[in-house]
Length: 120
Image 1 (cartoon, rainbow, N blue to C red):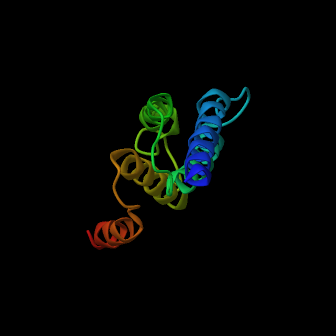
Image 2: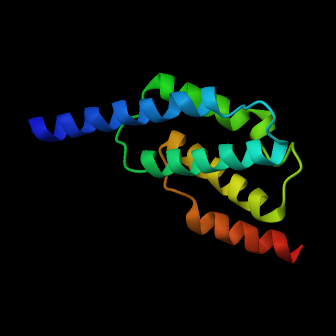
């Protein structure tokens, strides 16, 4: 029982440690918008992967993730991106939103949505 609690606490602390530098370190001097979005997308993907199995997410971590998701410069819907980056960015955002909501990772849903969007 103590080991389980220790692992859960370590996971929450580890996730919080991951989230803080994501928001603080994405913006860089002399970086193009697409580079900035790519870096943010990679970090969101890594964060979503790290949060998939977390039992509980600290409120501060949720707040930082929400800020990251809502930041317009890191969103391909608000900044010009290539199609491949746009798809990755959208999928990473969806994964984080589902993790925050306590739902399943939307891998199958995202694939279906991309398939439907390409038909139209």
